[in-house]
Length: 313
Image (cartoon, rainbow, N blue to C red):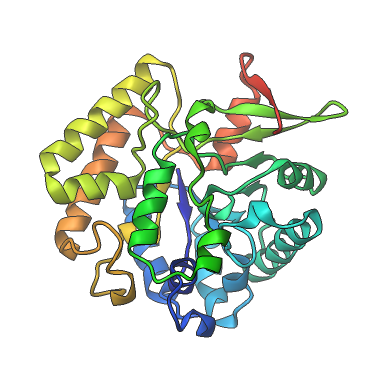
């Protein structure tokens, strides 16, 4: 299980909203709430942290609380720009190194895993991660519906044509749906490899079931959400596919908490109703699977004899 710790400013920046440059934040009130939720369920997960947030003094105490509670911290880039894959190799290396330095300084823990903002990645990124000693990457999202998500995002945004050009590959293309759902090793050349842990989508159909998608369905019908999630988990069980389950801050916030982000699906859902839906999802998940941080899951994957390989491209 992983939690992408995207902050208010990073959503506003990607959406093209004014005011993000002052780096408005909800981490101070979000993190204690999320840690309490996990602690009540004795869960230890991976928080992917944005370097710019880690570099701000106001966030040091909340991030130290994450580590003190036994959770893993991962690298989510420094500036959280979903067009990371369009940057030069030198720029990508700087993004990773600056974020890593800030995360270590704030939390005291060195990241072993990386997730690209907006599921952005390329071969240079994987090579750089391996060179810095990372155990795994978790940036791929094997689904066919990425372009639909991008169209929705653009329709709800105030982006200039230049900004749309930067974001033209946001959430990936149709070809992402052809990528494996199970973890595998990227072959980097020279005998080097790095583990890839995709965000799990339903086997064969490749439709998503991360928490934000489930809450969208829950806003339509809680019964529909439960039925779909049960079907997804059963499909994974039958396919003998472990689940890399993804959470976001907006899964724990309502429109009252972040009115700037009211355009997101499920943000209109009442806070209590949303929390009840989240609790239902966790109950269903724990009925089927044991829950680990991605670091612990990565070590189990690397010990498995049948781990597949793919060329990095």
